[in-house]
Amino acid sequence: MTGQDMLRKNRKRTRVLPNLLTFGAGLMAFSTCTLVPSQLPPTLADAELTTQFVTVPSNQAWVRAPGAVVVMERGLLNSMEQRIGLVNHTAAPGDNMLVLRARVVEGQQQGRFRFDEFLRRVDGLPAPFGALKPGDLFTDADELGVFFWAENRSGSSTVCVLGLRRLDSTMRQLPGNTNVMDVMLRNCVNGDVEQAIEPIMAVNIGNLASGGKTASSGGIRMLSPLAGPTP
Image (tube, rainbow, N blue to C red; front, top):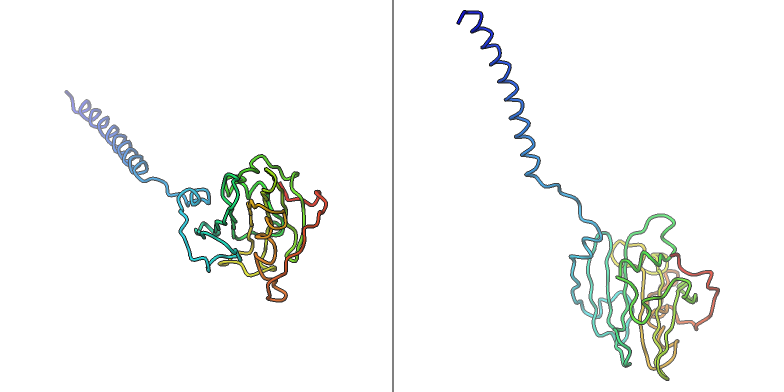
């Protein structure tokens, strides 16, 4: 082999070596990337799936709930939830309860109850109101503003009521640093609508910011269904 032939062979080797080094470095970089999982911040849906309720003393309930049998609470992302079990003296299936969702809402969305959004957060409406639509709700008002309700009767004396409403920080003090609290009531009683709807009325769910005193309850007044909640 001549000196020129050996020189050409060495040049070929020097060309291959950098290519192999480059490929090896890329392979190591790829392996390093695949070994480190991406860390995504938790979502509200994640928190709702993983955060359990804990029982708290009845005097820590966010609203006045005479006859409450249990008060449970959990903290979520930028929000809090409390569920209050109410006594049920009827044969109607399901539990009587108040569901309270306090959270931070920005801008103009603060003042209007969002029906579909709330239902997603509480896993739908309780029995016997599972198929109810926003247009099926009556609209009413008391000292704390507008609320929405529906009734279902069974037998000669049992009436079940579904009540929905939104409170904001101008109406009463809210838990934590939240500025909105959505409230849902399911209550079945052996009595009348006024008795069933009472737990969601102003006398029980808060005190007026203007006077700092507990508001008195008003009677049921039928208002236009056109003023119903936003779907």
